[in-house]
Length: 93
Image (tube, rainbow, N blue to C red; front, top):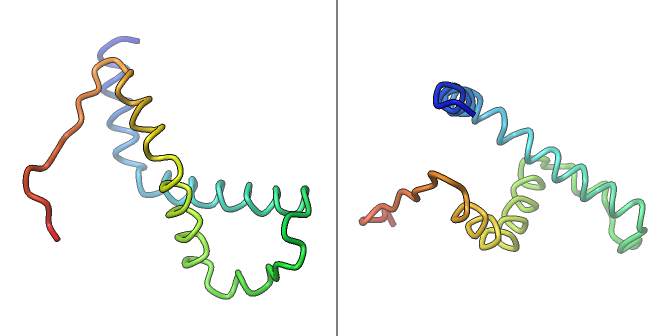
C-alpha cells in the first residue's frame, strides 16, 4: 500500500467514523440475535421487550462485546505496522 493510499483510507475512516460505528453496533446486535434464534439459546428469554429501547439494547451489547474483546483488539493493534497508541496523560473523570 502506498503512503497516499494509506492517507486516503485514514481520511475516509475519519469522515465516515460515526456511520461505521452505528453499522458495527447494528451488525453485532443482529449477529447476536441470529445466533440466539439459530441455537435456541435461552429460549425463555423474552426478546420482544428488548426492542422497546433499541439504543439501550445496542449499547448494552456493545459494552459487553468490548468488555470481552478489548484486550484482544489492543493486542492485534500492537502488532500492526505504524501503530502508535495515543495516551492522554490526564484523564477527564
